[in-house]
Length: 312
Image (cartoon, rainbow, N blue to C red):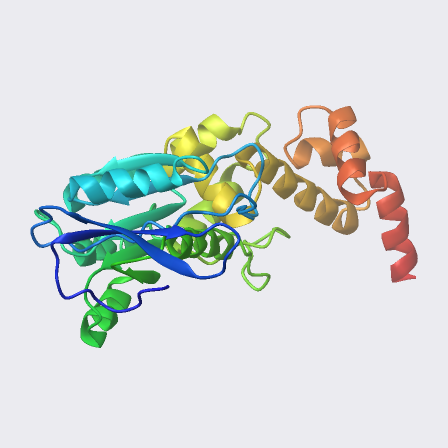
């Protein structure tokens, strides 16, 4: 049984269990609770073969920030998700905004109605900040009012889950948001770059472009100096770059240098391969040749020869 509409009475915690070897769900128990203005939870048991198919790098466990002022709801959602994600929590919108800017989660799950700062204001603030604008926000609400949903969309909410909700539905919505946020758009690219960039935030991308154009030929330009120039911590920059390109920051810098080297090989035929390596920002020609061959499956010299043949 799936409940899709708002439960009128707010004095019950509804627990739904999945009956073994049967398709139908049954109502397991009603437990009287003092939920004040909160709404029930549907706790749907997960079959043993239930798996999460999240397309993310195995090195990283996705971070989920839960912003919820109701203690029982917060604990319930945390318990439901903690097996698959690194969970961070906040009990109001103000704390949620602070933590979002600090940890840069992959997804934010936020209640709509909260003290201090509500879910709509949280969406507006985070979507207006270049460092957090890319983070998808899923809003939990007990209201099925179209006007409220429209207002949430205007504030930047990416999706909604209505209370009472199925845990399976919540998990699937989170998976979808994470996956969709990792789909890179091939039409958006930095100047002097062949790495497709997701157009999550134009201000951030403009800062990255300007920084690369200014420092890429400097062999001492690395993740540390990159993060300093951008104005983020190394971890924040790493997560932001990874969310936009599916590359680590160091791999992203290396790929930009390789692309620059390709252009130099093509346009400056008089330069030796060693000179190309230094001009592209590599410390040593041997490392440049190794990286170039790994990326393009041919050596820099072979690439230049092919370019000359294509011109003729």
